[in-house]
Each structure stands twice: as C-alpha cells, then as structure tokens.
Amino acid sequence: MSENTNIDNTTTGTEDTGNDTTQQQGEQKTFTQEQVNAIVGERLQKERQKNETDIAVREQNLQQREFMLTAKATLSDKGYPVELLDVLKCNDNDSLNNALDTLEKHIDTIYRNHAKKITGRVPATVVASVTGNTSMGVVTDATREAMGLPTK
Image 1 (spheres, rainbow, N blue to C red):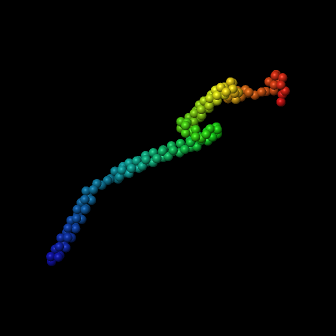
Image 2: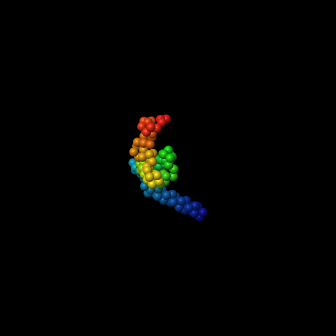
Image 3: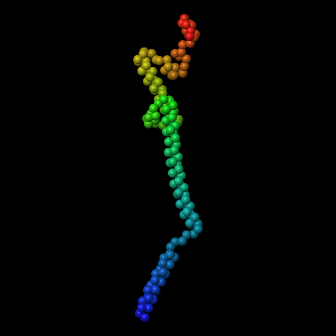
C-alpha cells in the first residue's frame, strides 16, 4: 500500500504540473486577426523598403559601370588614353563632354603657344581648328594662277 500511495503522489504531482503549464499557456497574449494582419503588414513594409534600397543601390552601381564603359569608349574614339578618366571629375556623359571640350581648348592653346615659340608663327592647322576656317592653309588653283605658279 505504501507503494500505491507513492505512485498516486507522483501522479498527482505530474497532474499539478500539467495544470500549471495550461495556466501559463492561458496567460500568453493572444492576437486578433486585425493585430496579426497589422504585424505582418509592418514586417512586409520593412522588407519592401529594404528591397527597394537594395535595388536602388544596385541600379546606381549598374549606371556607374555603364557610364565608365561609355566614357572609356568616348576617350578612345577621341584618341585620348583611357587612364585620363581617372583624372577627370565626371559622373555623367554631359560632364564628361564638357571636361573633354575644356581639355581640348587647353591642349590647343598649349600647342599653339609652343608652336609660336618654336617657329615664330602659329601653324595653320591650329588656327583653322580654333577659328573654324578649314580653308586656311589650302592653296587653291586661283591662288596659284594669281602668283604665276603652274596649276596642278
């Protein structure tokens, strides 16, 4: 009999523990469907914002890579070394074109000044490129006739 009593006490102790677990579960907060929808909606909104930010960063990186490829092609087409892109401060095609125009003007001025120091006169090709008059330096048949030179 004493053994039965011990078993009953053990069983009763287990049952009490089961009731405590049920009471603890009953004390946990329960949510209504609206609250669950609100929580899920907030989490989805945070994920969307995170994804939009990631997409924006990726798009910006892609645009920068495309610009670098285009800029390198532009520099190569104009006969400049591609390494010049590291020196130029530009983020888009317009700023690159403005920088190249400024660079060309300065190179032309430097070349013209250097040629003037060496020869004492400005080369016709430089004058023609600065003034836009491409006929300078070209001898026509009328000029040759006026000077009494044989025509070609």
